[in-house]
Length: 144
Image 1 (cartoon, rainbow, N blue to C red):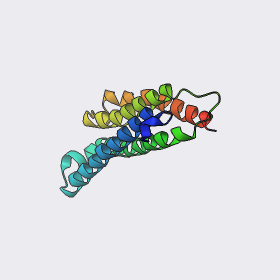
Image 2 (cartoon, rainbow, N blue to C red; image 1 turned 60 degrees about the vertical axis):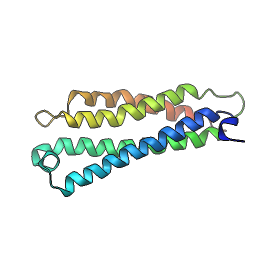
Image 3 (cartoon, rainbow, N blue to C red; image 1 turned 180 degrees about the vertical axis):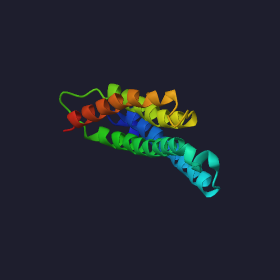
């Protein structure tokens, strides 16, 4: 019996794959930030680039954390209450969208800093927050 034969098996596999892939991408971003720091590149370390440094560190941290949340969501699917059966698809879609919007908003906001302020794409972050909160609410409510 493989994982796809269980209730929500395909969704579980999707979030495991997406979560681990997200962890890989944002752990690699963290490694790249360490390299920028080690090479003492002004693009990253100059005092005038403090906003960029903060935004990129927030992108790394949120990306890694949301990758772990996706893995936790996948593992949680096996513990959903049985009656009435919850529909995890909307929560799944919200989680995937939040996982994309939050770290990308920080990353792109830091890429286009103007006068100490993050670029306009940081506005992706507040779009992702209610999606993440909706997923967390649904998940907590749907457990046995």
